[in-house]
Image 1 (cartoon, rainbow, N blue to C red):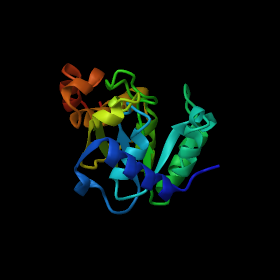
Image 2: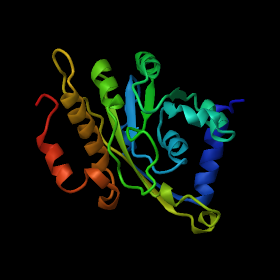
Image 3: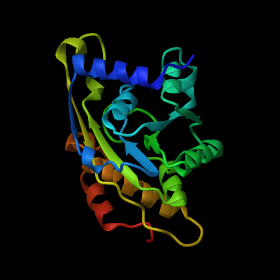
Length: 223
């Protein structure tokens, strides 16, 4: 049974207010309407409700199909109107569902890493997000989340960890001509992940920190 979206949002607001210190920067960067792909790093189960809470717009999330089989996570995901995606290969039905969400002028939430990072470090992104963005031409809104990895165990209730959500400026991937190559998809994915990395502290940037970040600034998907 799916819970009400607005009920879940109200509960999330209460919990984040009571048990965490929340800082949100860049809300003015969120477009008021039109198709939008919201992309963020992923370190905790708390990230989707946190993102939903920080946005002025409702987000439709893409989530791993395993989530919907979980007795707790499943109802929560359905309450947020999430839809499943199969991991390990290109899920064409999930891609079509994503396109429908964007065609309706809604905001689509995606975590390009595909799964939570157990170390809070950015992992290599998957190409599904860049493929969708290039096909649809929808703007991408990058978000960096820091601090939700501290939401674990019972003691965090007393610590009230500080959570920071940095919302960057929306951008579009450069247009392409002809058939997309693997190299173009990889470059576009690195560009998206690089924008997320810019919104995170250096200690969270993982494979997109240091030399990788410098290389991204010089690259392009048309190379």
